[in-house]
Image (cartoon, rainbow, N blue to C red; front, side, top):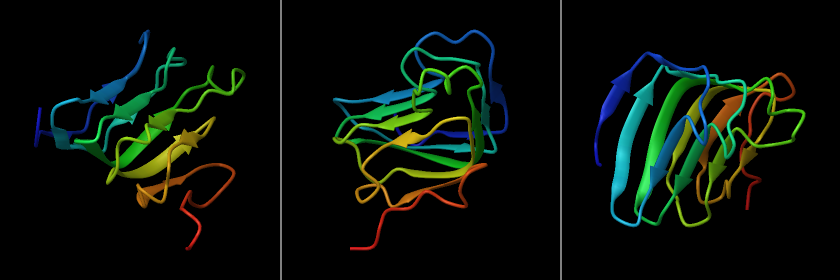
Length: 122
């Protein structure tokens, strides 16, 4: 699925594995989500899960929250090492991101504990 655009909306409530899952092996790229909220209390994998060499997403001005994820120390966002070029901005609540930020330099969230999550300069 390529080049879809979603504006506004919320993914909440009882979500099982992931609120947003983008996965190869084929192309699944340039899907954009603007001003979304993904806020189930808990997901078994992550709220956002991206994997595959031809897979990337753009989450712009999103809010990610998982009140029950903190106690389990689970990430809200997992970007597998096979995926690159993801762009994500917005507010991250309660936990963290698991990603290679050098392959995904456009990932930049604000949280209660930091002003941004950026890769270290090379």
